Length: 228
Image (cartoon, one colour):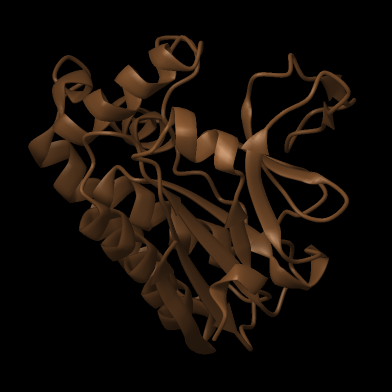
């Protein structure tokens, strides 16, 4: 397969951030309409492990979390206000807050992010116009993240992932409303975001875990696992 038909990097990104890479996974023929008891068992196991291993005081010093925090500072995001995805979910568990219950597939890949601390995104494959491009935003770019009521104008220096007509993510922390997974989704694209200091094998392993979790909960077949 020509993976450039799925995702390409703008040379300006690779020039400024040569150590960035993305791991991709695709799971097709899923059924995201029913809550599976397997998912609840997976949640309980993961929550127990987190509570036994981490505290709210030491979570910021976990090595992968530290790497994401350092990268956030580098690109102008305050990680004490906007947490890296894995850390945010783990903190929710440590604070004894309810596990987010969005949909079976989303909960399944969130579990992989919690277990690995790797920032992951999941998209409804049918809503994407390939190839995706990782590039710097322009001052004209508008973005509407999940849960946002209106579009916001970007500053023009953010790293974004876009398809041929819309932005689907601000790298590596916020996904777009228009491409999100819903109950009718039957094919999912998972992206795992590397940052300096995080081994690429760990990113790919997290994407694989996310795909396996989705398959265990929603059925389907894993089509692609690759680093780009």
